[in-house]
Length: 114
Image (tube, rainbow, N blue to C red):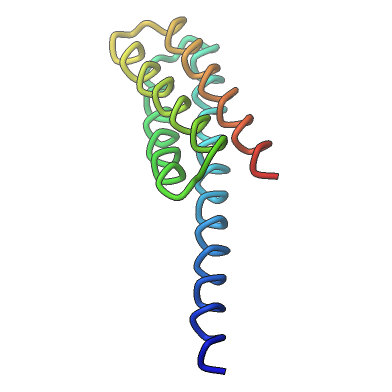
């Protein structure tokens, strides 16, 4: 019986980290989608606001993600940083393209976790 407790504790930890990553991934997708919409409307400053929130969530998801999803999340984080950099320069079009790339990677990461 005493040997089962660490096993179940480890199993619970694994399950909770995947839930943690999935929640952050969903939030990153939501904010990145909003960033793309703002960029398509030509609102670079609003794009930056949403891209920063998306980046925070993608970095949090990356901490616990593994394998293929982690690679996509890391690529999305880089694209979101590019979107922020372009948006800060008021370059809405390249910022939007970077946000769209990030969204593609985030969606691919979500598919890979299924």
